[in-house]
Amino acid sequence: MLTLVDDMTKKRHDIAVQKVGPGPDHMPIGEFGGAAALPGDGSPFLSAPMYWLYEMGHAALTPSRAFADAGRIFFKNPANPFAHTTAGKAAAAAFELFERTTRRYSQPDWMIDSTTVGGERVPVHISCVWERPFCRLLRFERTFEHLPKRPQPKMLIVAPMSGHYATLLRGTVEAFLPNHDVYITEWVDARMVPLADGGFDLDDYIDYVISMLHALNGETHIIAVCQPSVPVLAAVARMEAENDPYVPLSMTLMGGPIDTREHPTVVNTLAEERGIEWFRRHVITKVPFPHPGFMRDVYPGFVQLNGFMTMNLDRHLEAHRNLFKHLVSGDGDSATKHREFYDEYLAVMDLSAEFYLQTVETVFIRHDLPLGKMTHRGKPVDPSKIRRVALLTVEGEHDDISGVGQTEATHKLCTSIPADMKAHYLQLGVGHYGVFNGSRFRSEIAPRISDFILTHNGRGKGSKRKALPEG
Image (cartoon, rainbow, N blue to C red):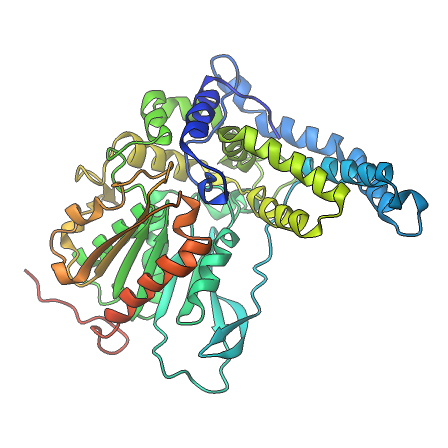
C-alpha cells in the first residue's frame, strides 16, 4: 500500500479523530474524497506509473509473504513444542500480522446460504439475473417449502460504487432477507474490464439503474446506499419524465450526498478546495499489464484505501496492536472479529476514471442536482417530475461522510410527491457505516424501511406501474 500522506490526508485525519468515536459505525467506508496525494505538483509524469510501481512493490513482497505464512504455520503447529511457549506464540502472531498487512485482499464471498422467514429456516441461492460489463445484478433467491403469509416485496439494493465491493452490504442484505425478495448490484472491478468493452461514466450508471428496473419488470422498491443516491434519484426522475411504467413503488436513500452544501463534511470541503483538475492529476492512472483492463484509466482502489486508512490511522494501528495481543493470549473470538472486519475493509476495487471524476465534479464541486443543472444524455434531471414513487430518506447523527441534512434535502427537490408518500428518519448515535449496517441498523433502521415499503407496496397494478396522463 502506498504510504504517501500529504497535507490533505493529514488534515482529514486530524478532523476525523476529533469527530468520531470508537467502534466500526464511525469508520469511513466507501465514499469519494479520501485520495492520498502524490508529492510535488502531481504531474502526469508522477501519477502515470503509480499503479505500475504499486504492482512492482507487491510482487517484490511475494517471497516474504510466503516465508511469513510458512513461519506462522510452523509456530502454530501443535506438534512443535515452541508453539506452546510465549515466544512461539509471539512469533506466530508477528508472522500473521506481516502477511495480513502486505496481502492483496480479493473480493469477499457473500457467505449467505440461508435465512429465517416466519420462524422457518430457508435456503438461499445466489444467482445472476442481469449483467453488463461493469455490473452484475444478483438475486438472493429463497427456496420455500411453504409460502409465507406476509407479503415479500421485491427490493433492489444499489450498492456503492466507491471503493469497496458490494459484500460490504452483507449485513444489509441479511437484515432484509426475512421479509423481502432481495436483489443487489455487484459492481465489477474496473481493472477486470477489458478496454474493448468501452467506458463507464455517470450517464452509464443511470442507464444501468433504469435497465435493471426494467429487467425486474416493475413492482420493485429501490434502495440506494450512500453514493448511489444521486444516480438513483436521477434515474427515477428521468423515468418519471418519460412516464415510464416501470418506475419503482418506493425509493429509499440512505446517507447519500444529494446536496453537499448542507452541513459539508471534510470530504465535501476538500473536493471544492482542490477542484477537479487536482483529482485528475493526482489520482488517475492506467491499469498495468497483465490485468484484463490493461491501459484503462482508473481511480485505483489502493489509493482510495490509503485515504480511508489515514483518516483514522491511530485507530487502525491500535486495532492491529490489539490483534497481536489477542493472538499471543489466545483470544480467538477477538482475533476472528478483527479478521472478519479487515478482510472486508481492505478489499477494494478500482473505479472507472470517467465515472469517478464526473461524480466528484457533479456532486461535490458543482452541486448540479440541487441547483437544477444535472443532465442525463443531454436531458434535464428534474426530481420535481417524480409523482408516483414514495420517498424515504435515512441519515446517521454522526455521519462524517454525508453530513446530516444532505440526504434529507431530497424532499425539497421532490416537490410533486404527496406528503403521505414521504418520510425522513434520523438515526441517533451512528456514523456513516451505521446507517446501513450494525446492531442499530438491524433493530431500528431496517424495520422502519420494511414497514415503509410494505405500506407503499400495493399502489401498482400488474407487473407495470400505471402511467400517468401527460400534463
